[in-house]
Length: 201
Ligand code: GDP
Image (cartoon, rainbow, N blue to C red; front, top):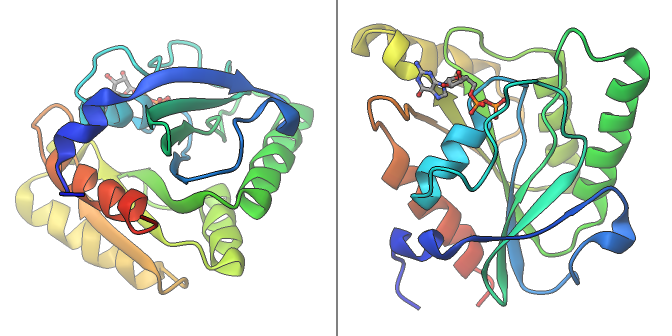
């Protein structure tokens, strides 16, 4: 199959799930998005799939505690994991997030890679690093989108990228600049996702 980021435009909502038994059958390949609340994860998903309302951009961060599955074709899916780290979310809910996401990352056979948006002005926090550790343990490749890179100059963006790369301890991690607003890196992110999705064909 030819890599064409237009494929991702076929993504459609499939289901949202609290429990493993609600997940679609664990066949084919999928790529998941995980990230801190308000980092621009939904905007990234929407831009990469060329759909303005596929993932709901969060007006009340921390609201969605479900895993949302989107079907690209019968064998390929995109997955939106619940956002984390919103200050007002009670500790109990934060723990629930950790359990749910870790369970998904550790048990999902179809999972080929994780897209991790990080706000270019903020860098990693504790939960971002925890997520990278889980991926490292599972040997799952990670691709980091340095979101909202329109907020920094080109030079400052490149410095932030190099600084962040230095902190990465999981060697199957790649990083790129990303901005929905200035349309930076949207196609490159789509190509990465398709590489992962098609690697299993
Ligand atoms: P989520 O909580 O991670 O899903 O984040 P959202 O996609 O809902 O975005 C959170 C906020 O960041 C919204 O106000 C978006 O408009 C804003 N945002 C998202 N992407 C960009 C970007 O590329 N540049 C800028 N400047 N703001 C962005």
